[in-house]
Length: 189
Ligand code: GRF
Image (cartoon, rainbow, N blue to C red; front, side, top):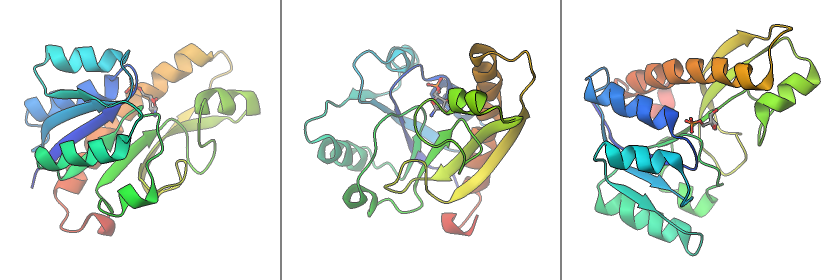
């Protein structure tokens, strides 16, 4: 069964666009009803508007209250975070258990938080990748759903490693959503 999706972004929105396309092409049975950003300069918001998707930019003041209202108004039943740079509180999340997922550009629990790809390069790890996890009120700490591994080549720069990871993220997000669409209880994944 498909979801009525909201996608929350803060930046470029390439994952958001990828999910949108997969829904349009019926690769997923979900529908993207809403794209929300906390950032007025988010490129992704302009991209979503061009695709005629309902968008909202919510400023910091009472952010969660406003977010909850718009999610309820649009009857959203599942939320994807994709480059969304804000922590959601325990109070907000209590209504959304196993209904919000996030993508992070590392093999969690390694390198949570900001600049994960840079952190991996600095550390000299030989493998990195991306993780999709349920969202809790910690920083990238929720239950892990799935991961993709990438070998770091010696010649990899921050720029091209980010690009490689993003490509895997796009594949992984669709795979995970497709799996969740078929589940009765998301926590059983
Ligand atoms: C991705 O690398 C994601 O893992 C991280 O932020 C980036 C967002 O990219 N949380 P985009 O906005 O989807 O292009």
